[in-house]
Image (cartoon, rainbow, N blue to C red; front, side, top):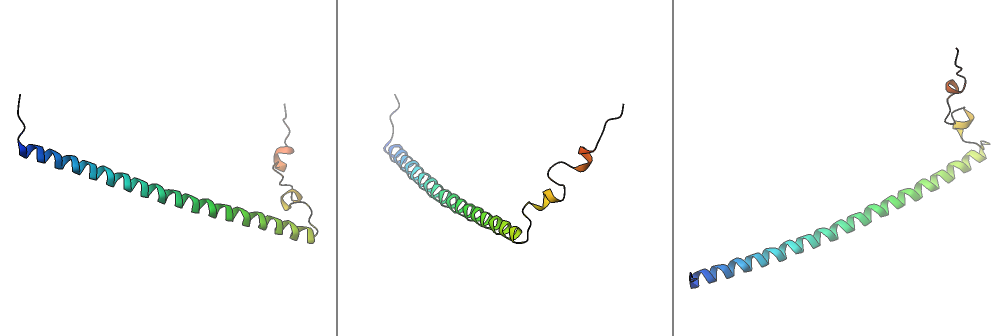
Length: 95
């Protein structure tokens, strides 16, 4: 059987130490990235909630203004644009 030299044992120990250092470094970087990702995600969700609240407030204010102006139904229905175009509803099939 082959005998390992003392130099080989020192070299193998250094390689193992470097692997452990690299492993710890990579784990630390992944932890930092995860924390950053979580913080960024929370910021985005918070901003989306804020925009949603602003949109709800805007919708309430628009409805209030429409009521004050005497327009109880949305403008699209008053103009005949309730999802059905007048062309489709007035079409007849000739045989």
